[in-house]
Image 1 (tube, rainbow, N blue to C red):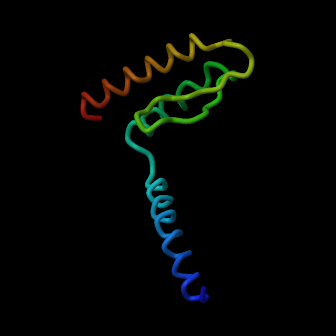
Image 2 (tube, one colour; image 1 turned 90 degrees about the vertical axis):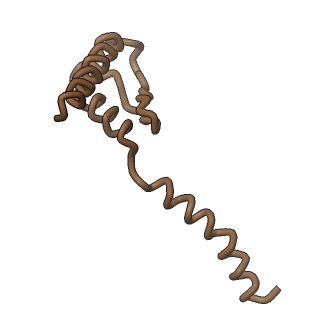
Length: 93
């Protein structure tokens, strides 16, 4: 197999991978941005919750390293922050 043929095969295989990789770097969804804002506003509640990831639909996935200390308070904070965001969007802010 000649070098130019090999280069063509590598290009054909790598091009779709490169396009797919660029698609994943498009940025966050609006739901992710809102979820991250909620997470940041509730970090003060406990130092036992660590952000693992935020899904495209805004689901916040966390990790706890020392049991569930502070989880209920953090969940309440996140719920209130979501309500505040909904109110702010409804008032046009």
